[in-house]
Length: 516
Ligand SMILES: *Cc1c(COP(=O)(O)O)cnc(C)c1O
Image (cartoon, rainbow, N blue to C red; front, side, top):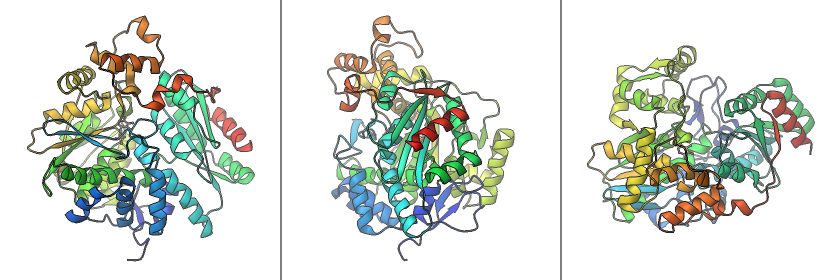
C-alpha cells in the first residue's frame, strides 16, 4: 500500500468521497453529522507490540501512526512525535504504570502540562493539525489559517490552549463560564502563555458559553466575514476528531507492552482495561487497541451517577429522555450524550452507516434508541460496566489512600471502584485521567471522611487552589504537587476579561482577536 491509502469514511454513510488523514483531522466532523473513521484498522503482531517496550514513548506513538498509514512521510511523523511527547511531560515514560494493589495497575495519563489526560491527545493533535494545514496548502486544497474556538467547563480549555499555543497557522480562543470554574482552573487559563492565544470569561453558565460558540460556528455570514477579512476559518478540534482518538490508542498498546516488560503479565496473556468514561473517547481507544491485537479480555466502562452508558451496556437501550444531569466530584464525566459511542456502534454493526444514522436520528428526535439483539450481545461480550455514587467515589479515594498510600483523583476513583466489582481473573489496567491536585476540594473531603457536597470550613474554602494542595500534600505525608499547579499563585494573570455569553459576545471577541 502506498503511504496514505488508508482513507477516512463517515459513520452515517453521508460522504460520497473518502478523505486523507490530513483532511480528516482538519475537517473534524463529516458533513451530515457523522464521525470519521479509517477504512482500515491495522493489526499488530504480538512481537510488534512487545517490541515497543524498548522504544521511547514518542517512537512508540510514531510506530502506531505509521501502521495507520497516515499521509505524511515517516521522518515527519517521527519528528512531530518528538515534539508532542518530550520534556513537556514531567515523566520521561510519558504514561507510566504503577502497580498499586495485587492485580491492579494504574496508568497515569496526567504527566502532561495541564496534569490531566486530555494532554495525551492535545499535545499531539495540534502538532499534526498545523502540519496538515501546511500539506493542504501545498496541494492547493486550503489557503486559510484556523481559529480554534473552544467552550470549556474548565479542563479541556486549558489542555487545548497548551496544545495549540504557538503553533503555525493557528490561533486559539477559549470561553469559560465566568465565576463557574475552580481557582486552579481559572488560573491555569488566565496565566496561559503564548502569542496566539486568548481566554474570555463568558457572563453565563457553561451551557450559555457552549451554545454561543456553537451558534458562532453555524453563523454563515460571520464565517464568511472572517474568511474574507482575515483569511481565517473556525475549527473546534474537539474530542470527536480522529486526530484526538489516535494518540489515545497508542497508550493502551504501549501500556500492554510495558506491563509485559515489567513482569506484570506474561506475553500474550490478557488484561482487563477499566476506563472512567464520559464522551466514550478514552474507552473507544482501548477497544481499537484490542482490535489491533492487544490481548484484552474485558473493557470495563466506569460511570458516575450520570450512568447512561452503564445502563446502555447492560440493557441495549440508550435513553436520555428522562434523565437530567447530576453534578458529581468527577465533572469531566458529567455527560449524557456520549459522542464517541457512535464510532463503537459503527464497528459493532459491521460498519452499517444506515443503521447508525437511524439510531442517531432517533436519539435526536425521541432522546433514545435501542440496538438490535445481535449488537447488544456483542457489546455484552466486549464490555463490563458499572458506576460509583458520589459518596462511593470519595470513600474509594480514602480507602485506596489508606490501604496502598496512593492518592487518586475522583475520576480515577470511579474507575477503581467499578474495577473492584467486576469478577475477573486478569490483571486490570486502570486509566488514571487526572492528578488529584486538580480536584483539591473533593480530595480534601475524601481524606477527611466528609460526604460529597458537604460544606467545608472557612479556613479551607478561603484557600487558593495551590494553598489547598499544599495542605493536602502535607496531610498525606508530603507528596508532590505538579510544578505547574503549585506555581499558579505566583504567575501573571494575562487574561481576566469577561464578555456576554451570547453569540454576539463571542463574535465581537473573535473579530477583535483576529483584527489585532
Ligand atoms: C475528559 C475526561 C474524562 C472522560 O473521557 P472521555 O474520553 O470523554 O470518556 C475522564 N476523566 C477526566 C479527568 C477527563 O478530563
